[in-house]
Image (cartoon, rainbow, N blue to C red; front, side):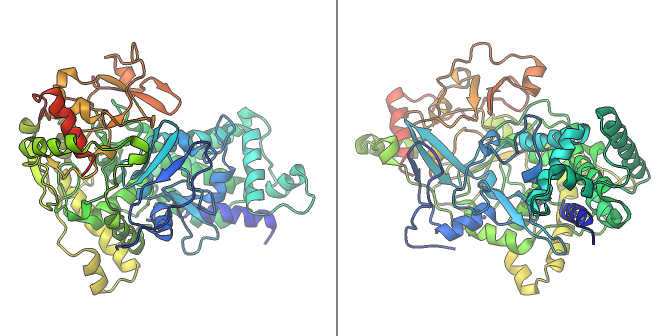
Length: 590
């Protein structure tokens, strides 16, 4: 096979791929990231080898070849991995591939190169900064902005396809990534081997005309019912032998563009921003098509992991009892692909189960006194009584019972609960059914087929899914135990309150405009610093909600936007200031 064809086969084949047991000893911390500031890693109960699994174990969401991701440039001329902090990801200095925390890697059967995606750690590991020291907390709600990453990937591919010099640069970098350059070979000679007989259009208009023609070809196939997610991968794999190198490359990039494009068409009246996602409303479009999509108006914060395995019902509204199906749904949202007719998918149930077991082992972090300051014993003890009188009835320590409260009682933003209480038409020939029913049906089909494809025995299936999965609509919100609640800012399910001190104020006195995405921690108020001047940063205009003002990765959170209300949960707001301080001091000890 000619070397150029080998490169093309690498591209096409790679596209086909378009949470934890106890450790009694305190494990040594992993090495600090390459930073100029001191760094501590709070003991999570996991050894370094277990952390490596938690940080990078695949779930089946690995749809992008690593060599391609490394070769693809943003419109600014950088790789997407050159500054993971731009998307809220954390560095992992122990990873041999220099992948950030939460970026997973997998080589699917029949694929000759590694593909990457994301797992649970991308959203459930965080780092706080205080007076020049970084504090990493495993299991804490992270700041990963998934929407921004996928938007960056989409525009990077689009930019590559629209400019001949960008496409040439991509081809050269990819060939070098794969080791296909001959000793001493020039870029020009390498490209000549790579091109087909037609060659690469040498001007913007020529290339864009070619890409447009291919786009129309995809649109025609889609109109005929032959192209459904994740069909771009399947289509390209089947047609790889029938196209030459240049066409294969364009088709490969277009396949990813086609796969990502529905995400760019969703109506998002409120930007999720760092550390949040409207997962269930986004899933409607991915699982049932754009015609079934509703506005993404219910972004919520990533929850903390410690103690989740003790809960009988999961998610903010307690809508399911199935950890496996919940995690499979997460993997679908992060990039896993499936055939809606057959139910086959790229999901990896054994690996998902491994992550689940590790995540269940993550213990609640201890307050880092060496960094954040000593706990005042007298004030903390006084706070214990304040907690018992004002908090313990709902936030029962050590209880596995999920306490659910109706919207009119809790008073917090209703969008997450009410949008899940909706209907969807699973296919054109079927009637509308409750979203929870349709979701249960799809996930059951995916789970059964994934178990079958993984060759799991009945005993293994029972261990991974011990109870009959239930998906339900509650129109309520759950109250969890408050262990290490100090490490889970911002607060309420939608992240609309930056600190616990603010949460203890009447809703009308809480911040209405504050920064999200910055990591500066305030040990006095237990949450993110709100010292930045917010004057003129938040307005009631819809555009300001769709595209909030930002300073790099950091965005401004506006409680005027739909889904962002900071109202409700007015418990403890009547307490005298000293009792509030006592309560916060006690919460540091949980």
